[in-house]
Length: 85
Image (tube, rainbow, N blue to C red):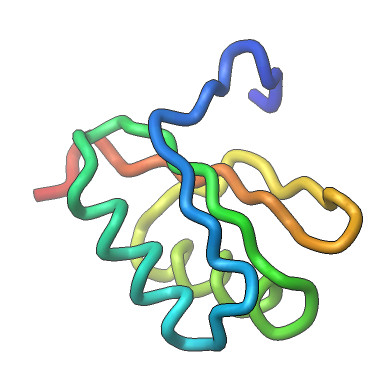
């Protein structure tokens, strides 16, 4: 479901200008601090960050709910799974 009205992020992380893999590590650490089921909006640069970070998060078991091109950077919505320890 990609309705912005139903997908208000619980937190936001601006990682523009942050290189790989640091941006993935910071995203994962932030998600681990959040409550299960929470939604995090992450801002990433074009190129390697938007190609690598969503893929790496999926491999770790997180759900990417939306990727939006915001002219100059990308915003992704990542949900922390409820069943994650």
